[in-house]
Length: 282
Image 1 (cartoon, rainbow, N blue to C red):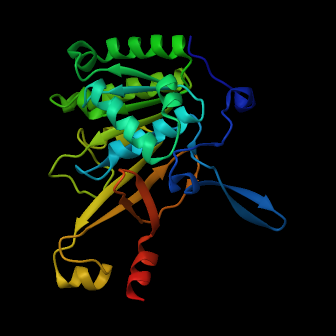
Image 2 (image 1 turned 90 degrees about the horizontal axis):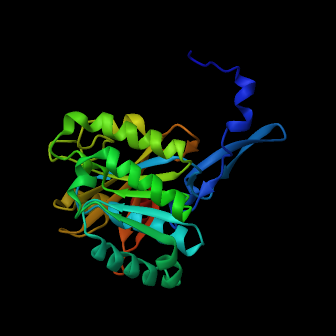
């Protein structure tokens, strides 16, 4: 028989609202509103919402994997176990990437080695093609290693030649992460015909509709005098932007922010786009 709840019965099951740090300015961009006297104040969460499943999407070379790896390094170096499912790059390349990110973030890589658990779906057809097999493997790893965070880079690789199944596959992963009380980061890829600034990715809006929130990364090539005048950059430069495209768990900054990828390969969020333009004008 179907079960129903009175709302008060759910109080003990409701997750607490606090942030899971990413090591970037995103930590200040999710917030909650609290009563203060006669008004209200904004209190940054200090990270993405605890137990949220966040989608990071964008066209190629916008920094999606870098952002996911920064999150992994930040959590692992802070002593939290993280499960990293690599679907695009073999695990040996992931090791090199996390090591570089650790050096750039000036953290102890030995802690990252100790606290990151890797499932290599890039070189295992069964895990990549059979979502049930992948979920069973993830469940075993989470239980055995006591993980509290999961990164999948990318979820698109699990349905890249069968996009009609995108919603079904993403829903299974989402429900699994909720059941096992994991804070999740899913990287998703865009197809060339999709608007670069939207939350849509391969499989349509399957990921964005199911997950708790989406972070959209974008880039613009400076290629006209108008671009030079507006952004204060040179012809051939690249302007990178980031925007939180909705989050159902908490309030968030809705502005478009400018960021750069440093020489060390770190995502550095600089300022809201209007402020960036004003500073360039001055």
